[in-house]
Length: 317
Picture 1 (cartoon, helix red, strand yellow):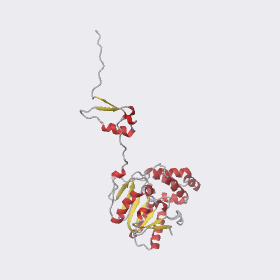
Picture 2: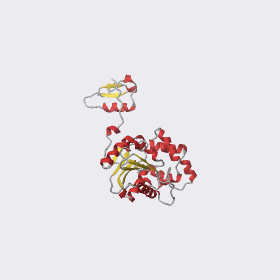
Picture 3: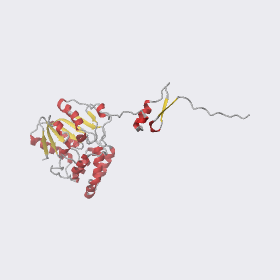
């Protein structure tokens, strides 16, 4: 049976982690949820402490059956689900097969990947030697992959944590969980008629979120590391949906970065590039106004809206 951990008390909520990591991914989000729910954090087949799986069976079908085994072992009649990243494909497979066991489903950073990363998955699906795969998913190459896709190239202590967890996982499971996604990550989600919420990260470098959001789509100000670095935003959306069935949109004020004050006085130093652009836009030419031009070092110079003087002509006698 899958390895799992129980925390909190209340209605059961199943948490499914993402690619190559363990249920440690929930360490920042679990404290915000466990006072409302009994959290069942599992580790998917073949990863971390869960038993290995046969190579000749579809991976996500195995995930669905293994998750159902946990539900029956715990004596839970029906539970809600919160899945993250590639774990959303495991949750999709489970909901398709056992819809009567799920009351609500939340997909966080759903794995509908950009076309460029789908090309990477197709290349990964080609026959390769185990030694080459081991080389690719190790050292600086894996670190760069985690940092680029999970953190948008930003430095963070969790980058090394994720890398260390992924390096401990079997290479064949890492590859299968990517290559066996529906359409290799490019097939839209299909979920039976149960209450469903999709939480997209607004700065996600991996996921292709929909251009037109539906009534059950929410965007939060985060990248693909949302469970770790944006746990309060995730909880702000998850709790109303699970407790009241209400979809809450994060306000644009929260999502927008605070703007620094514009320095108009040249004595305060050189204008920043964004300030220069703001200043030019705010002082656009209008009828009856002076025209302002922006000189070097942020100095302002005004000139009347007049045509330049014509050159004088000389005539011969």
